[in-house]
Length: 164
Image (cartoon, rainbow, N blue to C red; front, side):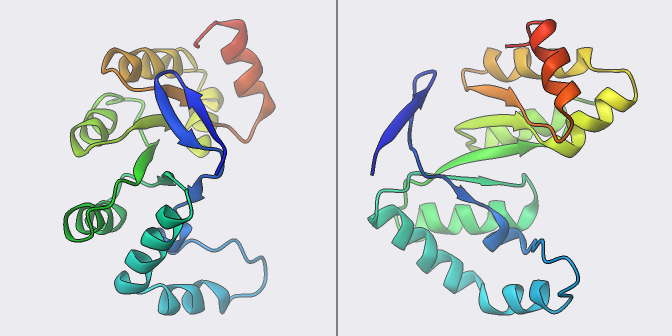
């Protein structure tokens, strides 16, 4: 599997999304798809899938910093000796932007980015400077940090402000 680097972090160029763990399914009007996906992706199936991904050279997964993904990753690392790197979707609050990031770092995140919906909310609230603070805080902890967005203006303004 080809690899790339973000800072000093070496990653496979194919990175798994965390929907198989979190149970999110973007299925438009196919309302049965999320429950079908969650029924199929039991904890054991997810552990098997993580192992299969690693056996084929996938070294990282992006997932929410919530209980279910963290519990499964902890099991995978402990029970199967997995080395899958976790890229945490940062979910900082505007009034407490450090706690969520700090908890992800303490759990073992290899990298963290502020998730797109959160970054869009900061932009809408005219608090974009907090994204820069989040990225600086993440990087100060020795892991790569970044910003995701659904609105192009978030990225454009972040680049203009040199949030890194």
